[in-house]
Amino acid sequence: MRIARWRSGDGTAEGFVIGDAVVAFPDARDVTSVLAAGLGAARELHDRVAADAGTPLTDVTLLAPVKPGAVRDFVAFEEHVEGVSAGVEGKSHVADEWYEAPTFYFTNPHTVLGPTDPVVPPVTQRLDFELELAAVIGGVPGSTGSNLTADEAAEHIFGYTIMNDWSARDLQAREMKVRLGPCKGKDFGTTLGPWIVTADELEPYGDDEGFLAVRAEVFVNGERVGEDLVSNMGWPFAELVAYASRASRVAPGDVLGSGTVGNGGCLGELWGRGYDLPPLAEGDEVRMVVEGVGELTGRVGAAVPAPPLPPARPRPAPRKRTFA
Image (spheres, one colour):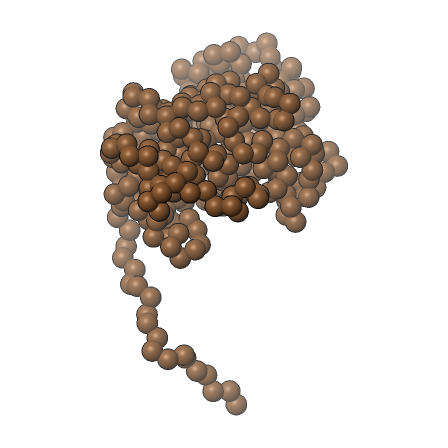
């Protein structure tokens, strides 16, 4: 099954992609409620409308397929870490701590973009893309989504979508020197789409450990610059979800990105490996293709200058307060 949100002359709607058409959910359901009800309930809804003619995909504009409550982005590809570290540190290096547990950061759910939305970056000299596959969380009856085992976590994966984690590398580099972040180097835009493909659709690509051997490619202005197998992750998705749930909770609608694939999944990695490629600029087109999922195209819009902020005020001595 494929699940999408779209806009047409009749307004916005949410439902299934069946063949080359979109068909609205019955009973005025939306993606949020369908995810919460889980895969079994989604199959029942699909059966009810499977024979409907729907509206041709060519007559609608696809939106981001989910309004996530939280977006976690992992860094699960060793080759990506090796390449980016070479550009930042001058040599390839993967910290020992990377191997101990999957690491992620939270990004901004309020700046999620759909397949036709241009990204509006901050003023940056090093705009980059990041090719990722993302898991979308669904509901499981009787589960709180907390402290899950890997097997339990697998049941919470409703489906997958393509994710482009746009990055302003110069802003990110400054932020990471403070040992916190990334923040403004990342939170201006994350593109998701074109739809959610349910987890059962990708089961034929899975191996005995739960890795998905799907091919992922990225093209900039029509030229392929990167390709990898998603099975080159350090951990399968179920283990990422399980880790995210530790002493916490994953909830229906949450999005968990794999992190950038290796072998050219972003310009930052290629720069670290010595490739002389320009940063993204206004008007550039980034097209991502993930086997079994689909294609996601994003375009770079004009940067918007932000109002200035002063630097931190130096304090020559600790501020003191006299208490009565």
